[in-house]
Length: 427
Ligand code: MN
Image (tube, rainbow, N blue to C red; front, top):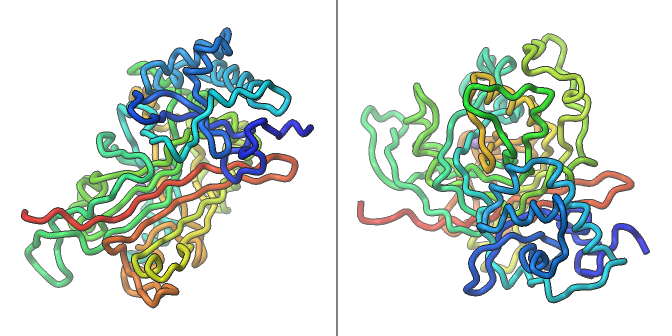
């Protein structure tokens, strides 16, 4: 019997959640309070029911007890040794060699999934260099990157209160915009609503105020990863963002995939950070670590699908807008943590980072409609006969991710999905 096999038969060959993924999440079933679980195939393994059945001991038991409050913050705070112990015990309990315990499973489609941690702070970075270049070229064709880009991991503080799990509706925002050629702004629904394909990074233990996390230790502060859609109202953004950066254009909602793919599950899919092109500056010492450069990057295939009302009515499948890879990050996740904390800024368990839009350099690899339509100039044509410059009401964006490597079971992230609803009326 293969070590990759589980007695949960839907896990075997599952595109996202085979035995070797074991992502952590918070779910509820019926009227039950939210509780911690693990995705396995089409099922959710109930961690608290398994604890009550006496299946955990030692560090694994402490890890499960730390999520008794229906969030993963306490488990994230414990750090790597506890996550590893829990993972090893789950591999035993769910392997094909173990005694089947179907009473500890729920069918995932019968459950609701929640944002898995109480997010104290959310930070959005801008480290997808192809996106930064593609967008920069729209405004500065000869000099797309600003002078700081290759020295500083660029980011801004986002809003935690509006982060929602996959499936939450996305209400088109109202706001203030300046029409082309106008001198005075007007108010109304955004006409240039967009998606951004990003990875989310969940913080583990973190640091006390005033103490930086060294680059060599930064990786230990990552609990896991998710998909993140940084919905963006480009017309509101263009008018409001100077001089302090995005504000209402991005804080109306951010959607994440609800399963936390742990750092351990992603270990086989780590890779070297791409060498910097000749002429690029070396990172300053606080951002440079040989081990991090050698295997601190991630090889994750990322995909965006669009389902419109027209495609839905004609029974046509969602159309792929984007196929890209997380290797387009100019800075590693550890560099983001080292930079964020270098001034003594406190990072806490359950804080969330967005990487920035992860586009490739070529058409078909662009992680936003701003890039695909070249700022709205070149509409996209769909099989339904519809065209899109930006998102219309009823459109649905679906993010997916997948890791593959010869000799290892492929794993995925599950979906990060959101459908656009009309703007609120009556303002
Ligand atoms: Mn973003």
